[in-house]
Image (cartoon, rainbow, N blue to C red; front, side):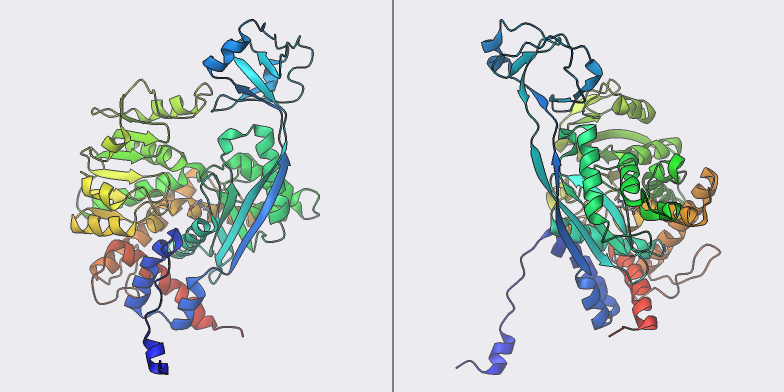
Amino acid sequence: MASEENFMRAPAPSPKRTIYTEAMEIFHRAADLIGLDKRVRLELEEPDYEHIFYVTTKLKDRLVPLAPEEAKAFSDLSVTQVRNPDGLERLADGKIILNGRALLGSDVNIRRGHLRLPDGGVYQLVPGESQRFKAYRVQHNQARGPYKGGIRYHREVSLDLFKALAAEMTWKTAISEVPFGGGKGGIQIDPRQYGREELENITLRFMYKLKSMIGPNIDIPAPDVGTNGEIMALMLREYSDGERERHNLRGIVTGKDVRIGGSEGRVKATGQGVAYCIEDYYADRGESVKGKTFVLQGFGNVGSHGAAILANMGARLLAVNDADGSIYNGDGIDVHALMAYVSDPKNLKRSVAGFPGAQKIEKKDLWEIQADMLIPAALGGEITADVAERLKVKLVAEGANGPTTPEADRVLQKRGIDLIPDIIANAGGVTVSYYEWIQNKRMERWSESEVDQRLEKAMKRNYRIIRDISRNQPRKTDMHDSRGYCISKTVDPRCAAMILALKRIEAHYMLEGFSQ
Ligand code: GLU
């Protein structure tokens, strides 16, 4: 008969590994090291709230291109001359959205639901139907201030992923000393498959539902993967339109266009924060960014602005990739020309692929390029143990959230590759989001140089505290004071960053206590 003692000793079934449990490994390691208060640990281990809801919308009619083989069956179909070509919105996947009365007034030749456009292609006319999307908002922790974090529009999202990203925001806001907690959310959608007005309707409907869960002093969304200032403008409108104190609600989202209450410098802020950390990393070694080479993974908001700022500091971009291709130029890629190429409306996929100033390479080869640093600035989990074994760089600076798996982390350490962890490296975005939020509250407008100066100080001060924790070197300088954070032993930088976050969060619980 199993005694109680035996029962107590039975090994707990090992929990399934998920993105969230992987992301929390570092939390547990740091919590163990500092002896984090047990109750604080329980508070932080799981989010405060996990919202899942649904958003429906009516899609527009679209034209779906036929493959050349299928089009043969319509070889004698004559061309439909479109009178209102502005109503046709071409998507990255070749489909065309029919906006407004795109075909009105045209002599439409339709056979079995197909028509031929002046481009010669045969398209199937697919009537717009209603569609439902799964939406999320995870509110992880608010011990230090309102929940804060981005809205992601991406095909591969899940509650588990948003939990990981929301927790990461809690650590990031603590590290960057902004008075916020952590949250994250978004919609399971590939935004490239939908037209502008469809995305507008989906966003408005999303905010219509989200409205009861958030507020400028409760939970403040911002852009993330697949969203931008335009999406934030829509969210602001849906939240505030018709409200009596509409202008007090401007801080409901950050990352807005500067003309409607956004902050100067917000768009480039995340990439700029990565660059400031890198600059400080080299300054600490008595070196400079000038002449250093880097490989970049991802050329979205973080990657492109980070690369442009590093290029301005004198570094050379050797290779970059995105979901549609990888490019390389040993003499250095002209970052500004690449930005222009990617944002050209003719470049429907907004991809680096085909950039004339570089040669095409395979994605797997990107990892083996010899350079001073690698900046992952795309999605999470890209640097696996296998990738980490192949890298020929001396420093990894994480622009993305969670790009390195725990196994890869150990490989980087074993191989002596330095790391600037995500929760400090990419904290520039949320830091300037905070500046935007204060400006909204005060009805102020700060200059770009003021934002830049504040951001540089905040990034470097907190990065230095993390370095000191890592080296167990408590000290006070004009810029920073790491004395309250070192733990009498050296730790790796990711752990050091987490220690800084946990100590700052724990102080709130210990000093304020718990309401029962
Ligand atoms: N999505 C960004 C991040 O992951 C910014 C969040 C914000 O500004 O609130 O840090």
